[in-house]
Image (cartoon, rainbow over all chains, first blue to last red; front, side, top):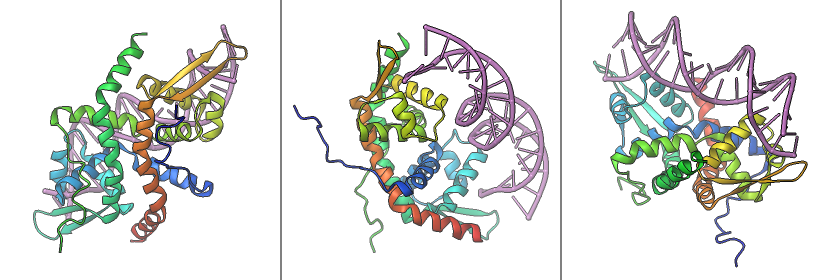
Length: 128
Length: 128
DNA sequence: CGGTATCCGATACGATACTG
DNA sequence: CAGTATCGTATCGGATACCG
């Protein structure tokens, strides 16, 4: 039998000197709200503040603002303020944000595909 | 000009009824320590408790235990206690854990590839 | 060795009120 | 509309001590 079914998909690691930095970046980016906002923007294109709030009903205004600012700072998205009244602010993914969104795509698909498997694993574990 | 450079990579969304569940699962799984432990186990194979602790020096014993238990509950890994003294406990990825690790591979590669881009974006943002 | 239990500080987060 | 400011709680997570 083959020791490894797919040894090729190599993710192999990383220069140890940058490993800590990559880990920090992962910690920043592997955030629930960040992932969800990337998804919403990738699917629907440019969105304004209220649209995002409606698309993600569970997020508080505070977390929405905070997450958007952090994503803007990290270069994931641009924030455009239109000088009109009432004010209008548009959020759009940058190319960098789009590539991250694509990278997360595999995780979304995994989650959707394996939801029930995880659910059953939990039940089995809790039953012990 | 093409409106979309790569419209194909479609991650498209999801049945709205399961969307909340998927989101919850993402929140559980998109965790810094979880991602790192998946990586370590994927790269090095079966590991015992102390080996994991050494491989991830920044994690406290509490978080290591806690994260491993949660991953075990979610069916990502198996925990095998050998009845010897001193005790020996082995942790190994399940096939489910391996597929998640592969899904995260793209995110690791993204982080490594774009570290400097994010760094520069931050500097630029902070300079304003 | 591989944990558990307890205490404690930091920070994440939500709710609410207010503003240009 | 798109925020900021403030407050209170809850959860995260480290340090320490102890145990089979």
